[in-house]
Image (cartoon, rainbow, N blue to C red; front, side, top):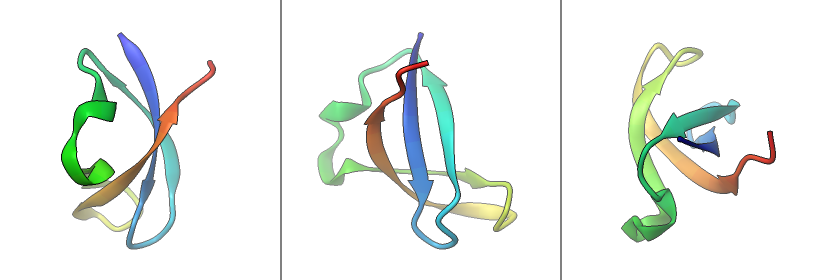
Length: 52
């Protein structure tokens, strides 16, 4: 599992996301997922791998 740092494009919330795939290969460098602050699905910008 790899941890990725992502940021919501709507509210700016940054958080870690654990995935089993390489997110750096995605076109547009964004992923569509649930944001707990916005309480809905939004686009998240992939900032890079988390160092934790």
